[in-house]
Length: 403
Ligand code: RFL
Ligand code: PHB
Image 1 (cartoon, protein in one colour):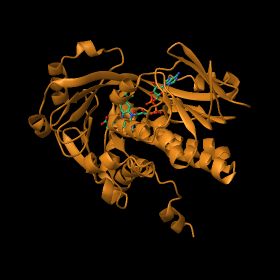
Image 2 (cartoon, rainbow, N blue to C red):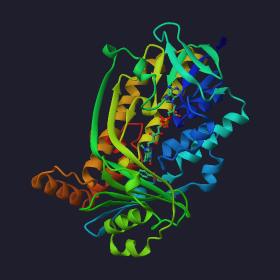
Image 3 (cartoon, protein in one colour):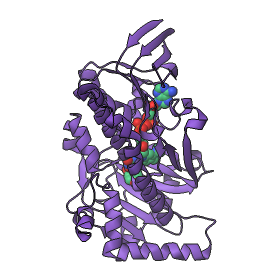
Image 4 (cartoon, rainbow, N blue to C red):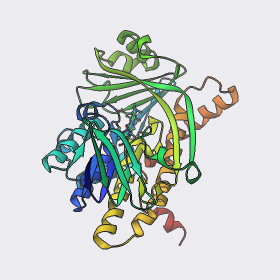
């Protein structure tokens, strides 16, 4: 058995684990990443596309924005299409100058992995039988790789191992509470090397179901269709996908749509899920290990980076300023943000998707709510404020009203 020692053991090398590693490195904190998959698999996974400004700022702090600054596309608005009518949400004007950045999670992962390699930081990929132990007192991690057993003693464990990981599952049932909503549909996603149908994202509400026109660059598009959860990718030829997307678009977009061969096609289930608390002694959960949002609000990756930002600060305070304040506040601070992002993602999902079991009354209420949101300045402002990412500080305009 090989025995190692580090300050923080990070389980999982998704964006949460990798970004945490880079922020800890910048703060001079020793850590090791343990990942069950191979590096090539991790670098190739296709997922999120939209970054809030706070996520971009954190990546900047981690020193990994060279490519993002070169290839990321900043967007000042999004469009919502309903009943053949498009509404532009001017994110920039409605939020006093904020924007979002289109830059693929795949690219972020590659940039972080590259930075890690350059700094010669220690990672174990292909780790089998990963287990965490004693996180109430003297934590350690065990795993196997190439027939060798490893034992890593550490002061803290960061559970960044996603929704199906072992960290959350290792917490005794009576110490944890979870909240969950599973939706009766999924998103069928297609990636294709064709120019996007429009300069900005289009969220589509239609009687045939939700659709989303997104992108990764000016030459690579990402499109999604709401499909029943029982559906499978094999039922969808490329032609069938493009035809159904056209069916859900307005005439102008339909005519402009450029189709092509899909380079990736998959169905993602939609789920809302929250874990309370997010700290268990010397174990911290971060990112999808602690919470899942349906992708409609583009919040999953952004929540993961926000958690990791809080955790890196807390560990910096602990190791470099000998203060436990940050680690004691970690769970509460994250959850305050998590619940609001969960609410927004649930609400966007509810508003824009077709629910087959909806009563006529509920359906009409939803249409009325959508009309209100899209036709009122206050309504659009609320959507925009949430979409670009809620501020970390108190609302100054609201405070000014109460003096
Ligand atoms: P990840 O990315 O799942 O990484 C977890 C890592 O842990 C590893 N692991 C283990 N390692 C060691 N031992 C074990 N026992 C382990 N078990 C698991 C896994 O192999 C993996 O490498 O979680 P993380 O880092 O928390 O990152 C979360 C994000 O990936 C996720 O929230 C986003 O992709 C969600 N998401 C979006 N978020 C956004 O902010 N904006 C978007 O536009 C957006 N679009 C999306 C999305 C997610 C989607 N899908 C596929 C659900 C679009 C889609 C379609
Ligand atoms: C994406 O480009 O993958 C994407 C964009 C916006 C979302 C979800 C996914 O709300």
